[in-house]
Image (cartoon, rainbow, N blue to C red; front, side):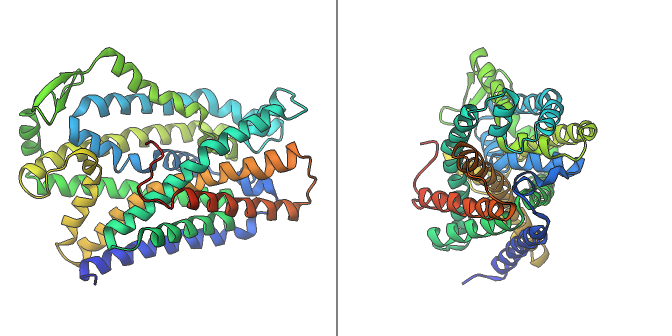
Length: 414
């Protein structure tokens, strides 16, 4: 049985899920063709373009990975990674966005594989098929990992059976994505980005106050060898500092290069209503990424002091990624309103996963229905048939994701 705090948390999360479903069904009637379904008719405003791109990129590593890594080893590893990601984000918007928007508009391309074939005059669609196959191979398991993350979150919070929780999460994601397509996914990603922002800022403020203030936090981590250094990392086991080599710095900075090849982000560039508004989107996205990652890292640093004072348990290994969950549980003990805020924080973790899963689901399904079925096999479908094929493909790809995610102990990375 859930206590009053648990009921408040669950109620907040259910309210969030209902909001994204309402958004999805609101946009259901705005899709008249496959182009509308997969690219939103190029109607995105600059703010939605920016926030949906970054929310779909960030995934759960913003609210779990970055704070956990900062808590575990200090600033070097997480700091250089964040710098690489911030630089990659800015350069992707600066160098890729305008050119891609212009070329895809001229060539009437609404998927990345389609753009490759049209851009390089590949009349046999060889490039399109190769790109589509690669997207399917990598994005279907990635989508499955998102479903799995949602299932594990509900299981850990409320004791719900993993398989049941995972399937319910997948159904919600598939429902609003299938109904509203790209416009629904982008709008929900925008909302999810706002929820993620509120969550991490609130966690940082609450945890800092609870830990005794900024001074107490700094005094604590100063005593950990290498923790605040960018050339050394803190090693928990030996309570010592370990050199952070130039090779490691370069390799972590290189994470930012991945942005240039992420279809679910590139689609946002293609979908903006006016290429001249990309400058606004670039500024919003770049500033948000820097602030969001900075706050996430600080949460991990503050978490060290919270563990030192006994407010939360000491964390090690993969447990460090649950630091925001631990803070949310602590917050929920202070009454009804704090419990609702704790629910919003946990909804932020859910949002960080869902915002990536819906975008990857669309990217993978468009590769199947548009680039393989219609282009490679030369199926000439009417607008209505094309829309039906698009929605059915989303469902099929999601089912594959559910099958892959059925084992709670499986890992995309392991």
